[in-house]
Amino acid sequence: MPQHAQSFVGIDNVRKAYEGFFEKTKFNIELEIKEILPTAPDWAFARTNSKGTTIVDGHGEGSEANQELYVFQKVCGKWKIARYCFSTTNPSPTQARV
Image (cartoon, rainbow, N blue to C red; front, side, top):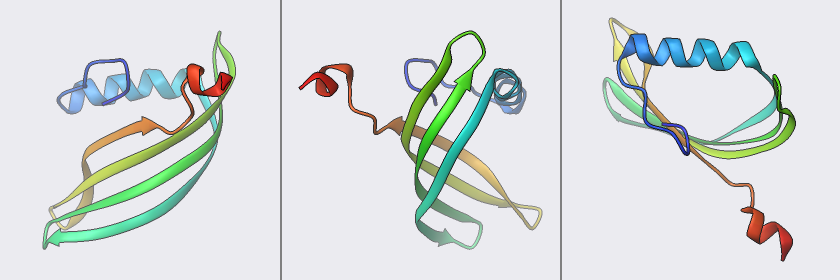
């Protein structure tokens, strides 16, 4: 569920979107786990923060800072990401000028 874009639905669409994204983007990101909470035997969520830089082909380097929410489901005895969303914690351009 990226900002400023529609959600990707279904395994094939998510895989295609992320393969394209990771082909064009290089990361230098630190991830901090803030919370992991099992909610049922086969469900859990994790809340994280990340910050660092990315380099996107044709767009150069940029600052990244996000908060993320992962929902995990245990499928056939293995934990899988069932849902994922994030939002930026970078200041908006208006806030950056103040």
